[in-house]
Length: 323
Image (cartoon, rainbow, N blue to C red; front, side, top):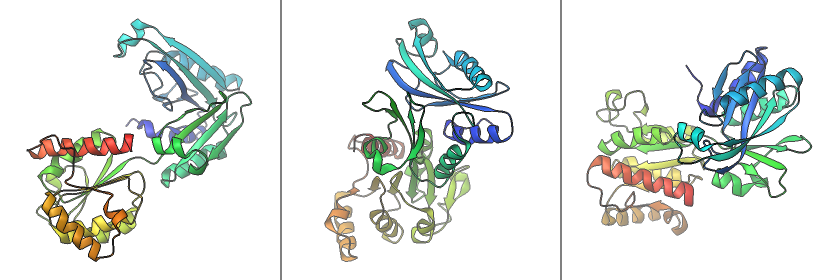
């Protein structure tokens, strides 16, 4: 099975350790209608195997050739490609653009130990940045404190000095859906398509059934028994849909005590007022309660479960991207 783009660093490390050789190619800058965003990666083995993408296909062949030459001769390379209008159209773009791609052989240029530390941080859901000086070819790993704005916006790029490239590696997005109701049946597949790894929690066996959510992670338990080990963090959204305080409230309290970037709760304005009273009585502060998005979702007049799911995912996207 093909590796997901998000697994590229781990795959590069595995290929290098297997003796196949590995070269990482990373988009460092774009202008115009570039096919792939900054930070996109492609890994190339010494045998010409590839995974990932830096251009959607239009310059991949040239990058692979440069990567194999770099693996044989050593040295990092910074490549610039102008994507013509015809090539851009071929990959589904309205017009051309320009991309710069950093090519780094693992071991010879990018230290194996540094790549291993990067892979370990990603596996542990620790935000980390890979920093390269494009003039001196100096490399290091950095934390959130050094580049807080880039981590917050999930934005890789070249710093104002024109030489320092910062590749942000945030943990993958996750979504906890509490209440395996009809809305959840639409929201979960939408969330997965949008790049979230969903977790469904509902202690009611009739709802938390595998046939209702094929292939998904479903926990037939209460949130307070599941979430302590799950590890709510700043790359997680929580949505409560059960309409049952015994199920929803523990998840809400856990979310409010964490750094989740979004917490949305189903229910009318009247229901939410009662919810706020309960949570205040359990010690939640006004600042904490103000983090709750309720009634959940953008006000687009949604009626059906699928429409409500669209409204919920739209609001989560707005909070993630616009704050």
